[in-house]
Image 1 (tube, one colour):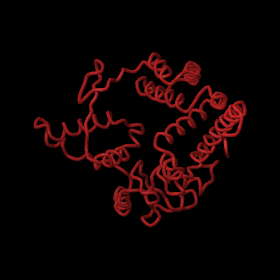
Image 2 (cartoon, helix red, strand yellow):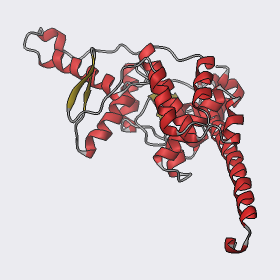
Image 3 (tube, helix red, strand yellow):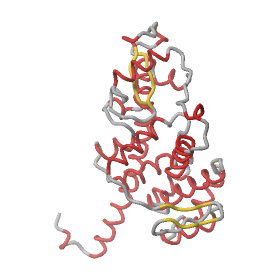
Image 4 (spheres, rainbow, N blue to C red):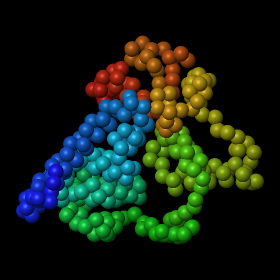
Length: 290
């Protein structure tokens, strides 16, 4: 299309129309992402998470994927926000700012903000420049303000911030460890993980610690030997997508269909792949009601 020949008024009108269509298309994308997540379809295609699917399959950058997933989840909770997205009052950047604020408040307060409180925040930042929206959420925050240190810096009476660099192998080990702890700590931050590791290290290496308390804690699990054999055979990773996050022992033929708890009928799946398998075998509605 040669835009150099159209009039100024037509150029503006066409651009406004395209912008409206783009916002409408965005909400459609968000609805599709929500349904893909509900069905856990990304697992069937071998992706570890919806984020993994959005970056590798759909080609979004990590930031683009994060913003769309945040917006999708917010629209799922607050359907009325969709009108503000379609009108342009709330952009993906606005929603990202709000979503991060909601996450901080949940972490700091121990519970999520109410739907009414979230809607109030979104109303306050709608149609505002992003910098101003960030300042508004900062003024509403009850969480400690985090500064940007060089290495270690006190940011509040009971908060410090660490900054350090590590080789790329450490990142994989951190993700692996978070996966092992995912059931007990489903939303583990790096700070919380660091604290857990410090506690383990103190118990392990403190000379004052009695030797008996340094022994590895034995977790009593029914049919533990079979469980260990299944994990060893799978190489401690999901047998469908290769993920090491939130691993679970799954019955290949579900128990609901008469599947036995035998080594041959067991395998290791991550939580998402396990849920997708249940949906495929039992149906979406029945799985939701389990």
